[in-house]
Amino acid sequence: AYDSGTAGNIIALFLQTAVYPAVNCFVLNSGYLLTGKSFRLSRLLQIWITAVFWSVVIQCAFFIADPSVISLGKILFMFLPVLNGRYWFLNAYIVMTLVSPFLNHLLNTLPRWKIRALLLVPAAVFCIVPVLALNNDVFSTQNGYSFPWFLILYLTGGYIKKYGSRPQKGYPFLIAYLMLCLFQLILIAGIDLIAVDALLAYRNMFMKYTSVLIYGEAICLL
Image 1 (spheres, one colour):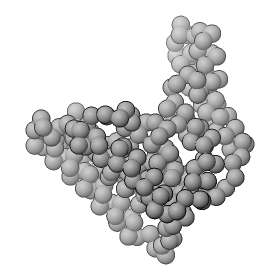
Image 2 (spheres, one colour):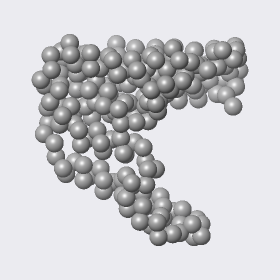
Image 3 (cartoon, one colour):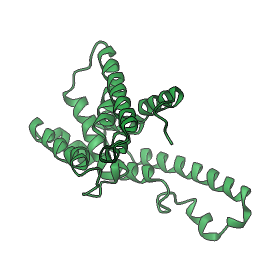
Image 4 (cartoon, helix red, strand yellow):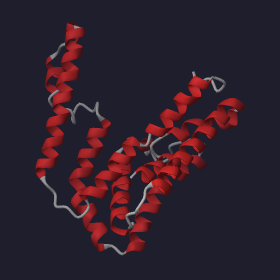
């Protein structure tokens, strides 16, 4: 368990907060780069081949470690990584890629205020409602481990590309990113230090993909 009084664990927690936005940032970057580009089946095929390769490598490693687990079903499913349900990121990303032409159409045709509404309403459902509900996933958003959250990230990345101005220097965003990470660290460490049951319900909320802080950190990194 995390010990709020150990300097090493505090450093580890800060590093965890610093790298946690990586998944969000990757999907944001996908929206930023793919907006305005035509859909290519080869891109989806490349993702599939990469996933199959690692699925086969990992499963074969398990077979070597324990031959008793070998079965026809496991051999079949290691070539079908989407169907075996083991790789949530892959499933969500492939579906997002399939619908990316429609998302691009929305970004290119809707007025700016409608795109903002399209982002703010779902983001509130994912980020704000669970906080008000004491970490209860009332809308089954799976805390960001899902395709709908990837849609929000993709649209956010596309919105930034379309309406955001490219800064001459990235230092303000780097500083904002570090400040958010530090604030997140203080919140988590403070909750652990106080150890009040009413506050412990909020602890894990700051280390989820749908956390407002994680979302903001990923945007700063982008």
